[in-house]
Length: 217
Image (cartoon, rainbow, N blue to C red; front, side, top):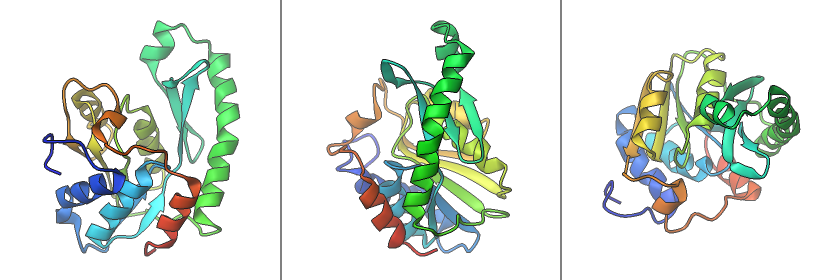
């Protein structure tokens, strides 16, 4: 797909396009591709294939507002990281105890998925590496912010955020956290990530496991 000309067929189509945008990192032994499950895994799989890089997951869970779960109050990531979305919290006057309660509910699922997806394999060591964080798109960017901050604690040489599609303001905000941000398309107006895919069916746990098992580590 040419950027902005049309929608992606599916996540793997988007991953192939994103892989081309990241072609300068191909064949480098210091590059690791990390996917945000679940939707980011098919995208990242194609990126890793194009670059000849190992693939792993980096777990993030959105903290959705009760009754409006698609509205993110923030997110949590591996390593005990929590990132809040101040605009939502302040505008809706969300109390701290509610944010903590949602975090307590979501963190066991984060741990479960980490164990399930890797099937007993340890996480890849990112120390001194160029870590490319991949998702299928950005909306508010809260999940990706949590991922960047959590990953930074593990000592990578650089963190590159790479997504096929996102609103320009989300990309600009992440530029202050990551070492580089690659947003393939930044269409306006931007309503939702799914509108830029013909097939945006939910990625299953089984698909995540199969893609990870089929990628070199």
